[in-house]
Length: 370
Image (cartoon, rainbow, N blue to C red; front, side):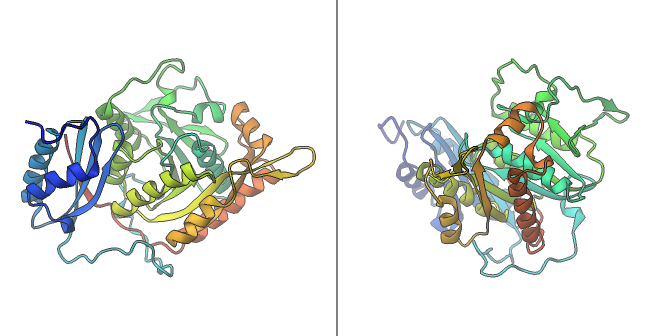
């Protein structure tokens, strides 16, 4: 028996069901109802109640699946110690950095793991992730780049490594591709470039898990992860499998992109991953002849949002020909001495400053219910 007759499920519908199940609002850490009928519910849990909460999550899933308009239900438990105090959403001042806790990382030899994310596609996230990684490497750091965007792997094209096939070493570990001073891994290296990736969620998660676990990254100062756009399974899997040091969110200035970034910030905050800062991409178009600026997508949207949310603003990246040409030719602009390259080097400096002020935290235990 369906409880609601409308074709599109709403957050109000979902909360009504949760109320009937005696789920208090204090128990709900986050609730996201997508336009295509996917309900993602993050519940607060504790070590002493995790077994009871697992049973509760199953009951919730069964009840929500009976709602008309619900296509899929994801119930996530963030298990904390019973004495843990809530983490402030945006600390007013950076906290001192403690001694590194390498045991919190699931990738041997990797010191720092940064997710470059966007809650919306088409904002230049992959271009920024690559050039930021190159800029960090040119500062003398050992850097890797994991292309976790399974549906749209663009790192092989942007690094000029299309057709490269990673090899297995003894022990069944993949050896990353070396290019532009980076260690690279992408699903694009093991699939045909022309094939459409028609994969369901579990296959995507399995692919991401393998690229994290079964790659010999060696000793890295920083691993940059180019995540898929959105706030779904892939991002939650990364939060579960890796103790991310933090996330960098990328947006263009216009309002429709900023609205999505708010959701991205909320997702990382709810999963206790520090947001290291926001970057405004395509901030303006710069005429290659006159040098005049045109604010095609608006002006200062990401910077204003960072100020509103109390988050660091790492900088602006202009829409210039050199950045696009570098991606198309497989020669990242950040490896040059151009003005465009300087933008990414300034971003790298701003990011390193933030890394110096953010405490490393172990990833919360997250339990997925199918």
